[in-house]
Length: 262
Image (cartoon, rainbow, N blue to C red):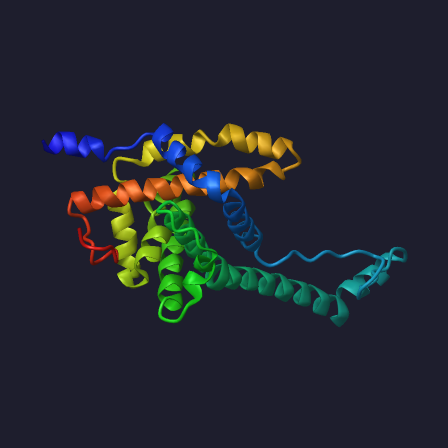
């Protein structure tokens, strides 16, 4: 009996994608807008461009003797320009990191919450501000920071372990959507347990979107935007299955995930 019930909770790519398509039939353009907003915010701080036609610039001597170049490189002006450029570069990096930690990462949780709820026929654009509401924001920021920090450390070790851990931690945004107060370490640990034995199938699931993304890039890159709602919706369906398995296996409970008792 247990084996039959456990098999019933298993999943296939075709089933997940089929359910995702069913959801998107009635709410595709809302899903498109949500995915587009996440893509825009994921760009972080805009890069700065410099040109010779405007703005403040420092003109370097193009001609002159070797001594004049030496004098310039040893001058306080040159030192100030180099130090200023380094400080500006550092500030841009810090600003980009801060933007990701405090804006993009919590917004990702809001987006996953939207798609997860849409999979349960609760299509509501108000979920886009879900993470930024009082009582949730700081807990979600901490949870996503811990997840991304751990993943970053694994990528520093080697690329392959980083990819594997990326799949292991991939349920964290959904878990924080269910319960922002679940705790940073608990969210990561539960995500690892939920994805145990599923990582290869999750990798193959991602590969199944590769053809769509290639076509999107061939369409001047714009076509990618139209694939993302399908991708996100499928991942939401995957989370629902893995969550049900976690409940069945006793890895979590309805109270921890803020689900109604059945």
